Amino acid sequence: MEVTLYSRPGCTLCEEARKDLEALENEYGFVLQVVNIDDEPELLSRYGDRIPVVAIDGETVLETRVSRFRFRKAWEARQKTLAAE
Image (cartoon, rainbow, N blue to C red; front, side, top):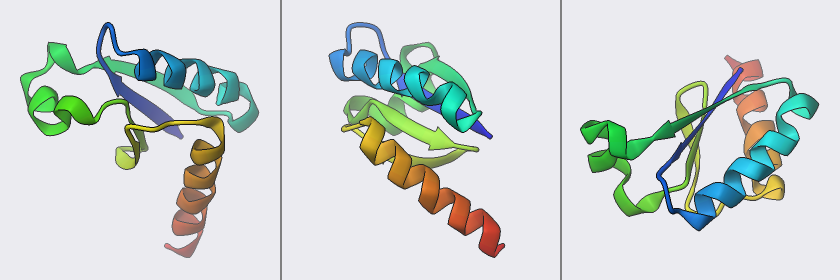
C-alpha cells in the first residue's frame, strides 16, 4: 500500500508526522510518498491549512494531528475496509 503525506516547508506538525511515518514504514511495509502542496495549486486549494494530511492508497485518513497511535488506528480501519470489499 502507498501512504502519502501532504505537507509544506516550515510546517512543524508535518515534520513530526513525517518522522512518525518513516518510523512505521518498515513495520507496516508501506511506501511513504511526501508531497509538497505548495507545488500543486489544486492540492494547496484542497488542503490549505489542514496539513499534515495522510492518505492511504489515495483515501484521506488523517488530517492536522498525525501520530503513530492515530496512524495505526487508521491503518487498521483501512485494512478492515479492504477486507470487506
